[in-house]
Image 1 (cartoon, rainbow, N blue to C red):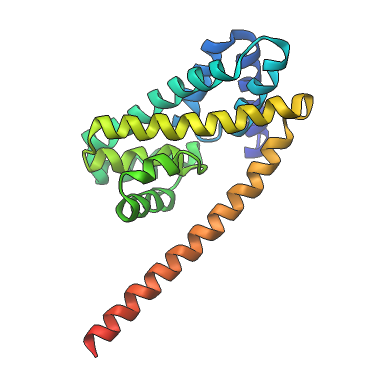
Image 2: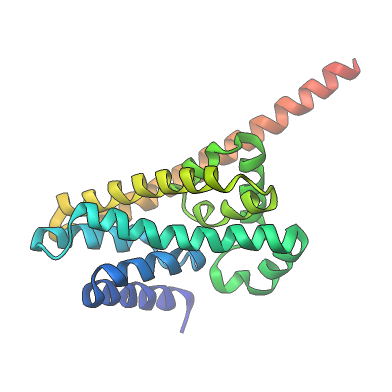
Length: 213
């Protein structure tokens, strides 16, 4: 079984859990989505949103129950950063990252974002694929104030959950289209971030050259 088939199987499993277990299933899947990025919230939340048309769920319920699962997952990664330190986290990613489709490059990106943008990156990072999982680790490494961490995580996660679930409700049976939109959004974010990093390095280099001159 190749990676594509594994991801398809994961999507089918996630849909089955949501459909059969309701809100507790949604919380479980969103918890695992934070720990195992191949489980896509871009599939889970629009599906849950589409089910609000049947009366099975409500938008408020999807946002809150999904947020609880995401928050629990974020706290796990925060604890990993705080208790293990950067070197051990890198070792874990080297050892097991391929199974989670994450790499030390992804980890480095989250570290740069946290160093550059501070507390607010916890809010904005919740809306960026891959980063939304790993961004909690730098917060733990920096021993970020727990109240602030919880506040920004809940705020960012709730907004992301609302956008995706409401899009699923609007599209109804066509909810899988949301995943295609998010795929485009993800590519745009990656390109923009890459450009931002290059510009940041170029500006720093130019300042150093000017200072030496």
